[in-house]
Image 1 (cartoon, rainbow, N blue to C red):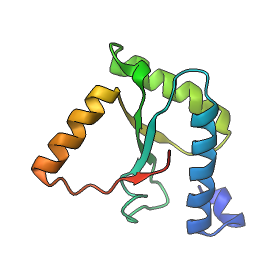
Image 2 (tube, rainbow, N blue to C red):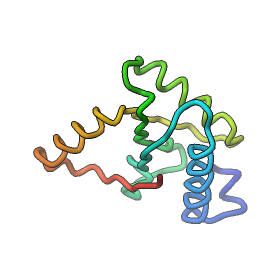
Image 3 (spheres, rainbow, N blue to C red):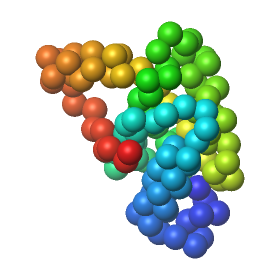
Length: 117
């Protein structure tokens, strides 16, 4: 992030990264991304210089495959971004996402999610 900040302000850098992520997820051959949300420190504006980018990614192809395989697919998709930023992704199938949304309502879970895809 530090090199990018020489050319962009923080907000501009975040918007630039979101656009790159959206484009990569729309074009990836590894899985069909139905939803993607920015979460964590960038979503709630508490990020620091060493913050990673936290995502929640939903795909029907994640059904019946392990969490490690899902993360491997996301890492392959993000590998084309050519940036020096760490990502952490929660990868859910559509069914898991529906359960997550239902539980979130019941628990009044207050993590901020910003939809980017």
